[in-house]
Length: 377
Figure 1 (cartoon, one colour):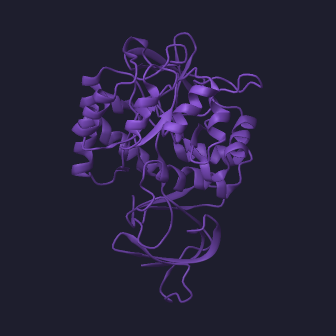
Figure 2: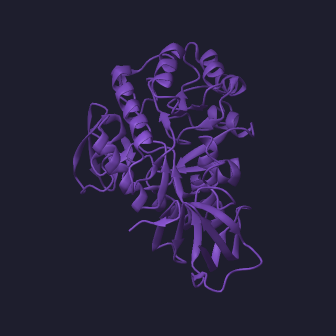
Figure 3: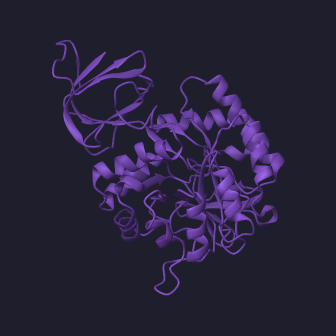
């Protein structure tokens, strides 16, 4: 099927007026010179790739770490409805047996591939290799030093679905862990009080990712630069950023894009099970009580625990903060696909890739979602 008269986010990460083709669930010709007369006329609508969230814990009162299959399907249906056509759910700092159950659940989901759902393309293992001081909303009872053998067993048991594993580089054995784990998946710095030297050593060992930039890491200081400058200096390192309007000030969002550049920034939601629930709802967060208060998840002491929005809204918010439209779309599509090694399958409108795409109004207030070329009703 051909679609014409569309404002297409093309393979070069720029918008072009033209047409594209969908054949057997994949993109065929993109911006062809000749277009059939019976092509579907999109009347100038904006077409972008399906969004990819590589850091979301849950929604609709379900959390990935629950290890509940029906809950995971509920999450994935909601993602799809909001234009997130692929996702890599994030776990929390929990005992290995709890993580193993959640990861086995993800493997089953991939194998069964339920219809009408966002596609699970990996897992982000967020914890337990974190610093106590910067634990944020992670449960301190289950924090551990980096443990490659434990990680490798989890990795093998879920069929290699772990695409990102997080670690605080100042912990004992972190550099050796990074060197080994980076041969299997992306390794990210997260929940850390690291100085510049430890961060640089971890990056030199194989770190290529920062989890939720600014959050749960030291601020930049002229005498103690810390993690962020160490990451900025290495062009291989990409950085997530939570753009919900609560976690990060708009000026700091703009600064993040300035420092890393549009090709290295990844928009994430970091949503929890509170996404889609009423204001004031109490919910479980890794064995801790949390509440949805003033639009964001919080622990009892007021610590922000998770967002209550989705990646599509974060992309729109980034644009409202002054991030150029093409850069915001890239940060929600191609860049996250690259971070989990899925860029050859999804993340851009290009020949042969899975035809996950959104047809959006000019203001992005309305959207139609297509999974493998079929419209989600």
